[in-house]
Length: 189
Image (cartoon, rainbow, N blue to C red; front, side, top):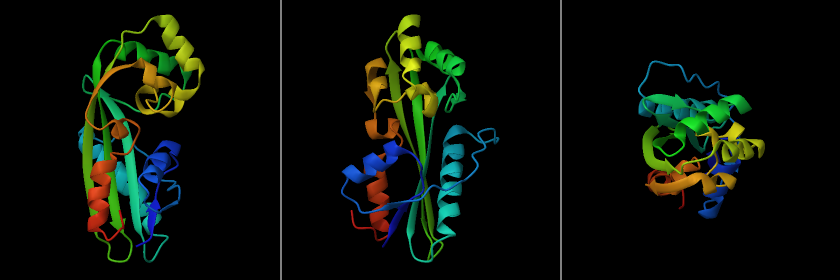
């Protein structure tokens, strides 16, 4: 089965490529609505499925993988900050504390219409960061494009004290769980 990753994320592409699975990449263009009245795990699955379905509509015989990741801290969603001031706010709030990174992933078989969704959560404790460290990190530009305002797979790795769970999930794709489910869709893993 042809596998298509419905994502513009370079991190998801790298994680999946390291697995040795053959795939193509197609950005979904799906409009994410973070304000939907759903609990975080359900929202992550909903957004991932929306992305996968959008790409699946354009293919007759493919398996499409979509994913969406965000941080949850004290019951609030932390998506991409999209601005330096918001990134500084996020990192200041997370400094010295534990939060959860949630990735919802969805698999769609465009031929049969079969779908599967799952959520994977990983607990991340951030080091106690000084205001100077936070500003210096935000200046790297990494924080603007990543949920929670940091990229563990980049310079943001230095901000982390500990991780409980799948570290690939923090980067946007829980590879072990994804491979297990892709195999059930006939993808050679």
